[in-house]
Length: 281
Image 1 (cartoon, helix red, strand yellow):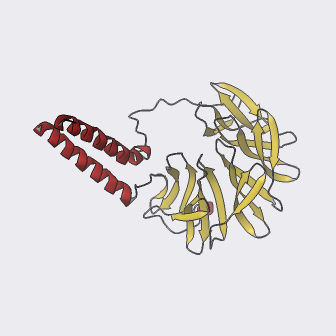
Image 2: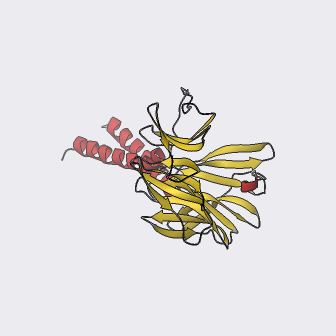
Image 3: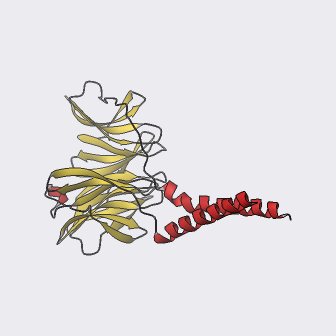
């Protein structure tokens, strides 16, 4: 092989190494937009409408109020479908996944329950022994998260095909799961002796998250703390926190591990050296 061919081969190999090193950074970069086009969402004849969830196809779910009470809705391209769990006095749709499966909560004569709506077929969701249950998230594999209350307090849950796993952050007096991504990472918030804190649950390993400067308090009472509400497939977490100026939203973007930064540095350095060698030949 000629010296020129070896240099070209080296350049191609090192360029690939640099691309691989930068890939994790690209995966966790937040999307940027210079402007947004806003569309008002109102269910027909509603006195109040709340849009609470959206999937990748742009289907929107939420709830609305009219003269007959509170109802869930599915908005597909401006066409509204009213959602009412049979026998419910009130229905709220909270989230929708890319298979158009909808989760939410409803109230009937026996209390508050969760539901899963698959193509118009409703399945009631109740953690055994719970007095109330709230469903907050569903991913594309139909893993469902939320929280419930029983005689021992408030706990998070993960529902996989009707099998419930209780989620409790160690040392917490209450735990609420509020979002799940397609990798099964769960976010929410918990309260302990130091106030309310957001958490990330990765396969049962809990990481506490606190926005710098957040005040100490109970997020459920609006007195302080940090609370996570959702997580996407890039690992970005959205939620809210309280500080001395009031209540604010936040976006938490994962920071690459030191090993990733080292790979990036090595890849860029070797690419630069290869380009210098190429120019020299």
